[in-house]
Image 1: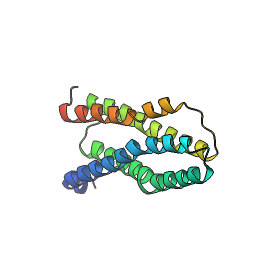
Image 2 (image 1 turned 60 degrees about the horizontal axis):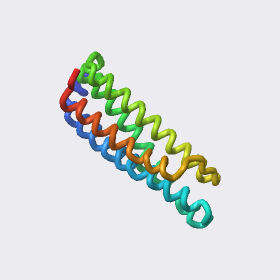
Image 3 (image 1 turned 120 degrees about the vertical axis):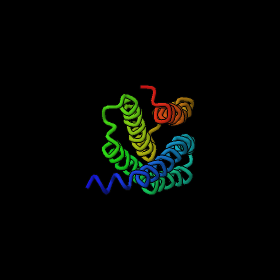
Image 4 (image 1 turned 45 degrees about the vertical axis):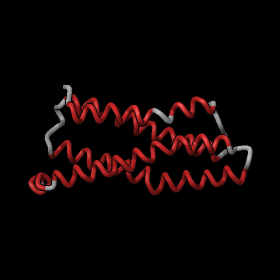
Length: 147
């Protein structure tokens, strides 16, 4: 089985990159959706539209991409025998953080759907920058492999 996967390594890597792009695009826009949704809570029709938009983004892009990123990533690390490499451990730690951020954003979206806004708009806007920072660090880890 591993022989077939080794032959497919570049295809797996390409698929991993494609789904990382999809996932990150979703994580870049989703917090902005949350900001707009929170600002629209006083206008029920507009808030309802944001609930629908957020649900579509989650179901069509965010969650499927997250699953694909993890699936292809674990497969690549196994086929490439990378589990002992320090840069991969650091990358995995950041990807776990991004996955937690994804989960937090989905949970906050569901709270907003119930009309519960717990964060100041400024802090919510600042959370929008976390995925970008994570991507910068991950790219350097993967390309430079500093350890």
